[in-house]
Length: 186
Image 1 (cartoon, rainbow, N blue to C red):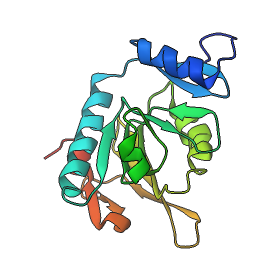
Image 2 (tube, helix red, strand yellow; image 1 turned 90 degrees about the vertical axis):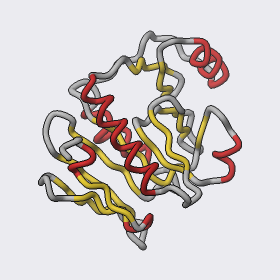
Image 3 (cartoon, rainbow, N blue to C red; image 1 turned 60 degrees about the horizontal axis):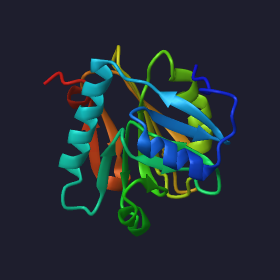
């Protein structure tokens, strides 16, 4: 479970200034700061694999893929997060170097510390992003990927992939992400 770093309520401006000057990344939720501490080597490897797969499959399709160090702002909220991996192609996102607001795909690699937050709280917030089409949760310790996708009616559907031969279907991009590649089992 994540905890606020202190009881102080920060303004968005204070948060942006503090976060840009800090060596530690912070998520910002309703005026409070939350440390995003370091990750395990396995977490890092999976993020890298996902970034590589997405960059490879989306090459030439006008999408940008980001990993861990770029903020996403929940529109209409004072809520900023650092997704592990995300994809955007919105022109406004391409203009802002530090903060993106219009991702189409967000991925979180889970940990004991963030599992509940990523699975419930973040997903509730992320659903407020109108451009979001996919939210993917990846278990690093065992082969299990849950891909939430928005259907044509705007309802969220879940597809679980947990076998070595499975691939995460991303139909709107016309690609699939093989679990072999995500978990580097090739």
